[in-house]
Image (cartoon, rainbow, N blue to C red; front, side):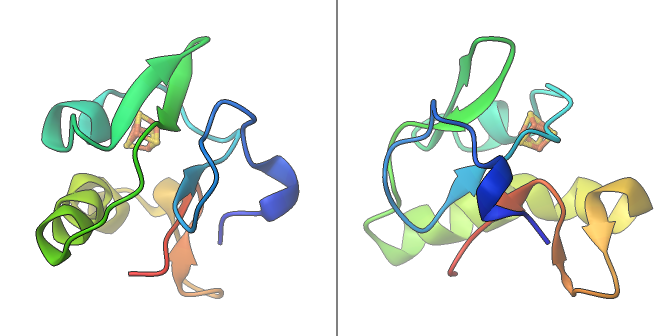
Length: 87
Ligand code: SF4
């Protein structure tokens, strides 16, 4: 699970954020460029989803790698290790 204490200050306020464990893989940015941007070497949320389509895009942006690589999915906590969302 993403940790609020590790939330990157480059994120705008809101439910969705990138924390400090981002490895700058670029996936979220090319899948949801209206939500994520690159800031100081890692991703950050610059626009909080306002529609169901935007929320879906944000989730889809991180889901593939989360399922593929255990490093991105915390099975005990049942959430993303690097991004928290209230989707
Ligand atoms: S998908 Fe995750 S690890 Fe990759 S750039 Fe986005 S926040 Fe960082």
